[in-house]
Image 1 (cartoon, rainbow, N blue to C red):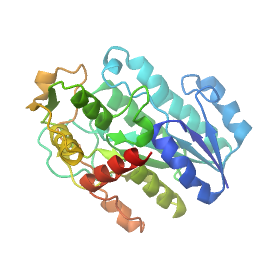
Image 2 (cartoon, rainbow, N blue to C red):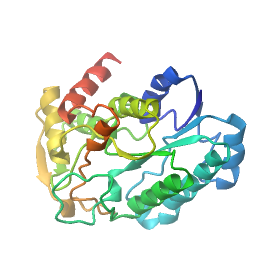
Image 3 (cartoon, one colour):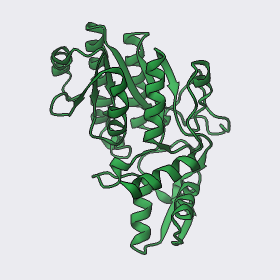
Image 4 (cartoon, helix red, strand yellow):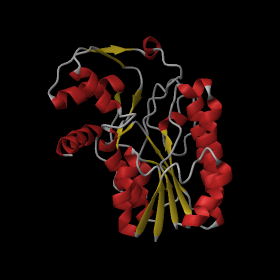
Length: 288
């Protein structure tokens, strides 16, 4: 089996590629080789590689910038994914596409984890573009696999351009600066190694359709930050604030916890608790 991975150099892609090798040849692809912003070139790129499975880890994820430039988010997350799904269908390749908990948020009183059958309701241009990408991927083939996840962090993002939330918290704390973190958005930040493991398990079972894959439990970003510092033995100044006080350009879901119950029906173990995943991440980065 040949598996192509777009976004192979990112946090999730770097954890996925070595795990996918259990199925056969893995072909990492960069944006220079296949650019979702150039849909007219996608078919030729896919037909050149001719994979059995195409894993798309690439996305436009500048959530706040998408509010003022929604066309940029749509170009990658919607139009680009549609062209990719069409190209994969043309060579009978399975598409694995990653989406986000930000397809939810419109239900302001939600307090129970979302299942795959719950109606989405994005509250940002980014979330809307990702939802359209989901629809495009699933419409192209019932065999395609769409995985919603949340707040990804992995060791390959520890020193990169964007980094991740854990690294940002540790960096700012190390600089001796006070931190103000949002305490009214509840979700489940997830470790890319665990998401990669579950993705490989789903592929191994031939799963298709929509799945939620996140670590277990839930927390606010403030609670996540507090646990990062507790496990790291740090005691910086940490203050909870509201989303309104933070003042981001894009709205975030007040509650976007995802249920992973569907994984059990496909004999795929649900990822471990987020606190345990964080401990594993901190250990991995120390041993990196």
